[in-house]
Length: 283
Image 1: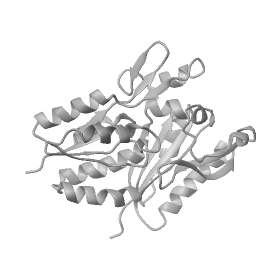
Image 2: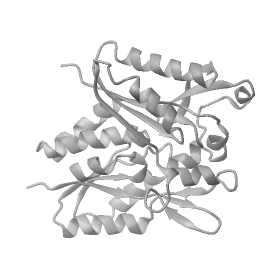
Image 3: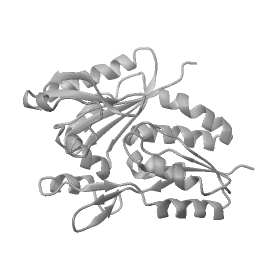
Image 4: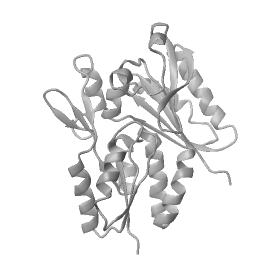
């Protein structure tokens, strides 16, 4: 009899309701200041990060290898036979590669570490899909086989007030636009097939950028229903207005709202508004 554990990390940005519903085991990343270290989503909030950015831009760190091993030992002691781990994408963090190395030492568990090639609720949507399959009694092999197609159905788009923090954190990927900041050009950032940030398109000013973001959602919903999550980073009012404007869309089968993790906030700075779109498979 298979007993399958579901693992993700704190940047998946799923709320406690989803974590409890699917019994998701969360590995927490870390935020490191000169004088103190914090555990992502445990003893520091996104707002605390934003408030302190002008004073110090902290470093971020993946979950410790010891935490990973401790989790695998705990799963073994609790009778789990299999585990599926879906962390932040390998192109955005070292968490995936480190988790794969740690998993390789636990031969009593059948472990798949799957590259989400995404972040925040883009990875979170994939974790939810996996959790649903586990709850519905699907086998480990069935779930692992389904993950690539599930990933292909998920897309992420977001805008930020400034590229300053993505540049400082080395997370700029294929996003261009340092000069564009001076001209108030706002790139809409997405994630490519390799799991790297890139510029989906450019518009002038944040108001136009949010309008374009809405157009992108409508284009995605033209031919199919989808689950949509609106996310914000230090931009609650903007994010909430965006969320409210989508409430009556008949092609949205689920609409979620939340803020990004403190770790993600370090790299984006305040002012992020974004969406995750998960297209439902055509029947």
